[in-house]
Image (cartoon, rainbow, N blue to C red; front, side, top):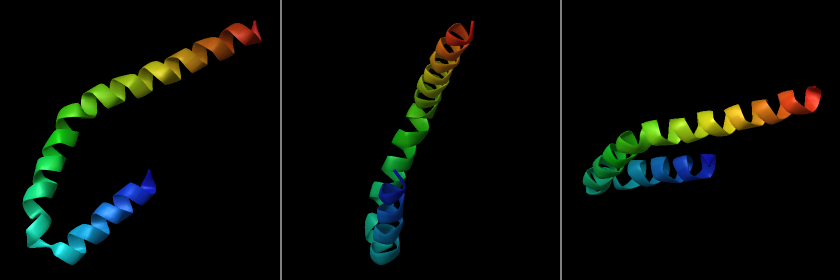
Length: 57
């Protein structure tokens, strides 16, 4: 997960303006789907907490 971000950052620093348009499009796509990803993470955490609470009873 971190490696992907590092590779994108290095590519951006090396190729600068040439990748700027592509990075802007990627940024917009990520911004569009951020709420969906956050909802999935919250759902998974909620399910884990419910399972842990049931096992504690």
